[in-house]
Image (cartoon, rainbow, N blue to C red; front, top):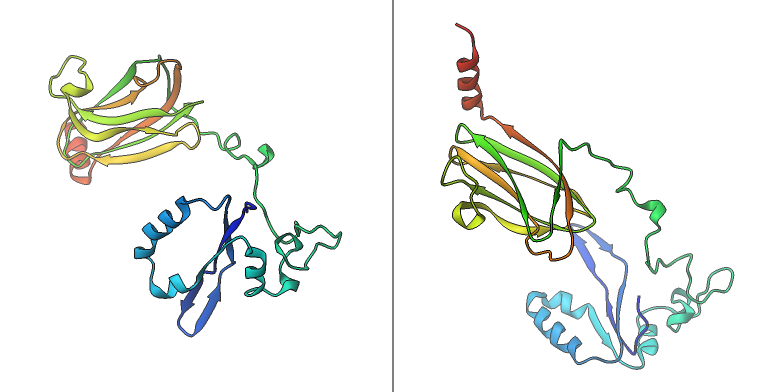
Length: 239
């Protein structure tokens, strides 16, 4: 919650069959009374039902008095114009309200959930790294997971148009559009069902970075379709 000169009070009520469920009251504060708030609200209103719009109250400079019209003083912290305090007299009622803030590093789970990747590569600034996989049958599935160390990385999948040589991204058929992923925050994973046979290129893109070399760790699997698996096993079965 941010303390400001104007306040939006929104109460969301979820109606179910024969039962009302009241979700917590949400306060959004804007200070000073910015001209952007009416613009944003007017853009949002067409997507709100009439019932929802009636549940939204916009309060101005006297927002504390406005809150008391909807909330009992005993249930409103002193900080917001009520009379409620913590047992120790704190007007912010920290024992009842979570004001958010920075998450302690002791609660981070990224370092606790370590994935063992099959490959790791350093991608220099302004360059890319390509990994090729030959798909023998339509319907095969490419499945991947990757993690970048310290910064985001671009990723896309392409189908080669010429065999036996490295091709630039613009020379290949784009299968999965390349985009940047925050894989340094959360490992990225996905899959692609290949519609045709050929050589598929998984391309890790760092061409947009003029400063940083990126370390990328990744694992890729090729899953054969049932029909392809049967044919593949028949070809490998000794006569």
